[in-house]
Amino acid sequence: PTGPHRPDVLVVGGGIGGLSTAFALTRAGLRVRVLERAEEFGEVGAGIQLAPNCTRILDDYGLLDEARSLGVLPEAMVMRDALDARELTRLDLSDLERRYGYPYLVIHRSDLHALLLRACRAAGVELCTGRKVVGYENTGAGARIRLADGRTDEAALVVAADGLHSVARREFVGDDVVSSRYVAYRAAVPIERVRGNGVAEKDVVVYVGPRCHFVQYPLRGGEMLNQVAVFASPSADASPAGAAGAAGATGDARWGGPEELDAAFEATCDTVRRGIPLMWRDRWWQMLDRDPVDTWVHGRVALLGDAAHPPLQYMAQGAIMAIEDGWVLAHHLTRTAPDRDAALAAYQAVRVEHCRRVQTTARAWGELWHLEGGERLRRNAVMRARDTYDYGFTDWVYGPTALTPDQEPAMFTPIPLGA
Ligand code: FAD
Image (tube, rainbow, N blue to C red):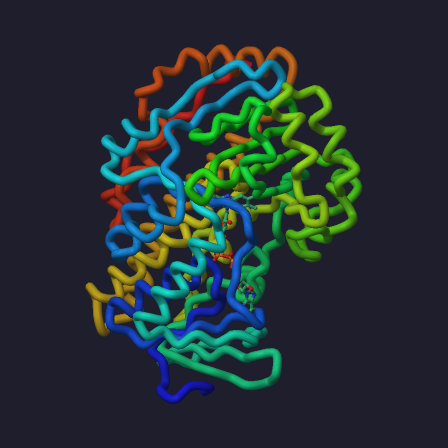
């Protein structure tokens, strides 16, 4: 053991999922130690979207006002066709806030991460960096982790929030990542650099196109614009999914390199094409997920966040699901105390099905967004027919996070493509 007091919980990974969970569990009265492999805590300097199912939890944590002051509350979320720029459908985000009671917020990832880190420090979470976990073992009364330097640490409960390439996932599940053959480029740029390009400075805009899409939204009080450019990599077919995934999600040189970026958006509308030269070209993110699994709890080790349910990012719910996981787990650990096994069972009983639905819906959204030819035109017609104030597609995900399976909102009904 590495700290002065033995903790009740070890959280492996200090990303958004790990830190928010550590905060929630500390607030529930547990002693928590976070083990992060990096030498410093941090996040990528790009944006993240937080829907009402997340801002509701931040409010419960007393962190929403600070998040709001650091981020932007956009006016609308607009979907456009990437080729002709025509509007397909929109969400009115003020009305959305009225419906769900909490805002739709966009924020710089490093601002969100730093906010969670400050909250953890203030709450008394023990935060350790330079601790790479390489193995897990259940001990009966708890679980033990092994660090790369040979040291061990243990607690009654271990939460593995170690991301897409989770060591715990490999050890307890042993499945491979699944490659979508799409790749994402990001950029956060000063708003002056894009003014005059037809950018909607107060909205989240998603341009959907054949085998590509492009996202723009404001950050930091509107001083910056976040951009995400996603496309099907023509060279991805040559690389086995497992091999690409094993190399990590940032800048695997084998496919999706910057030489493919410009060509992928050549036929898109002016606003999109003028955004492409601003993308960061030294890093890119291959779009990988995993097939859903039913079991996240292995003895006293619980998978959480991307380690449990990494999605394709098309619903913008990956980090949110991780935050929800921590909130639900803390609720059940409080409710069933001191019976930790009952809490873990309750956590798994409610979270698995919801996250499966997000993962599979995200894959379906990807297919829908990237349609070509006649299918694209049929999709556009269906989307244009949607009533702005029809919340049938968002209730199940933006509504209150369920604590028990019987609270789960209605099932998602897929859009009929007519194809
Ligand atoms: P991670 O963020 O991966 O954190 C894992 C942490 O564990 C890291 O700090 C890592 O260093 C550490 N770690 C890893 N292995 C070890 C080890 N062996 N020992 C110790 N520490 C370890 N989600 C949203 O909610 N909204 C969005 O708008 C959104 N947009 C996205 C856009 C893109 C382009 C992408 C790629 C993703 C997006 N997501 C979004 C998804 C979101 O980024 C992830 O789902 C989320 O960051 C997962 O958080 P996590 O804490 O589970 O994992």
